[in-house]
Length: 118
Image (tube, rainbow, N blue to C red; front, side):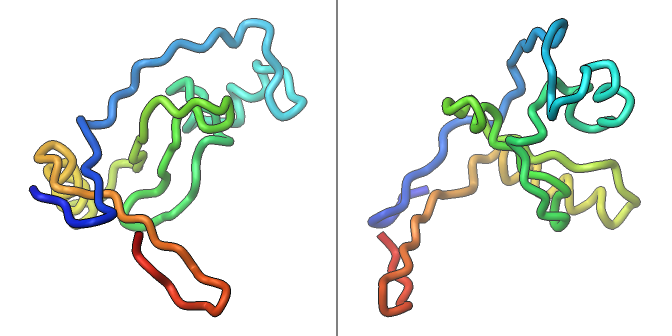
C-alpha cells in the first residue's frame, strides 16, 4: 500500500521473541513468587506490565515490549479470549496485521491547539 507524506508502513507482524531471567529479580518491590501469584496476564508471557497500556476495546492491552528498558523490541496486541462477537473482531484484527494493512501516522498538537499531520 503506497503511503503518503508522513506515513510509514510498519514492517512485519508482531512477534514475541524474548527471554527474561526473573530468578533473582524484584518487580514493584515484590518478590517474584508473589508477582507470579498476582499477575496472571503479563508474567506468564514474560512481559513487563510497565510496557503495557490498557485500551479495553478493540483489544484489552497494547504492549510496547521493551519500552521500559528503553529499547522497544516489538508491539503486541494482547486480548483475552472472548465470545463469538469478540472472536470475530479479534480474527479481523489478526488478518489486518497479517496482510500488513496498517500505517504509521504522526500528529502534532500546535501551541494554538490545531492538530497537524507530519
